[in-house]
Image (cartoon, rainbow, N blue to C red; front, side):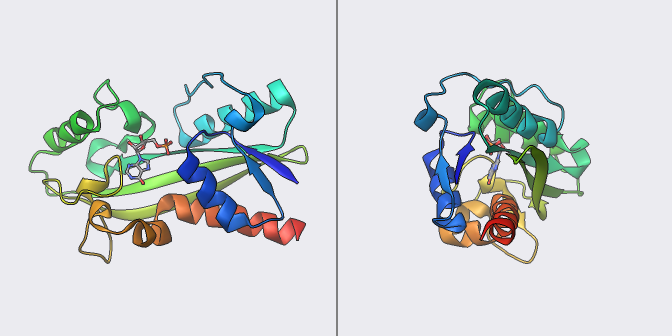
Length: 192
Ligand code: IMP
């Protein structure tokens, strides 16, 4: 069975294909010739993820899934949340991290989490899968791996930031990995 993943991120695509195995062929937006800028105007991860699948279902009538993720910081009222990619008004992650550190200042409450929501549209039904990892925001950057807010996030139970971990270490515990595993378990249970 073919499933379209509403992304052109090759890393995400490979990661999901590796986990779901050969029972499903996962195709990207580029694979189906979709060059549209799919709207992401929701105020929740669920809305944004579903906007992606709604768009593909309406335009192509294909079974598909899409994800949306971000960083939620308790002391900032769960910001940057859906604005994670452009928190400072630009996609410049240096500026986005600076803004987070500036807003937090010396606040002792550094509690934060990353969250991913996956929307799946399959057999005329809508499903959601969620992955969350809890942790805290440190006061200055550490590490050079990963992407986004990884240099300032330490997951609970660890002493390294996501940016100090190897990709394999991060991918075992990340919010995205948890959500993808739930999607995969669901597909395996129903379709193998
Ligand atoms: P996306 O929905 O997965 O593209 O994520 C949106 C934004 O959230 C990214 O541009 C990053 O700023 C942030 N983000 C999501 N996942 C991660 C992660 O694993 N590490 C660091 N930042 C992340």
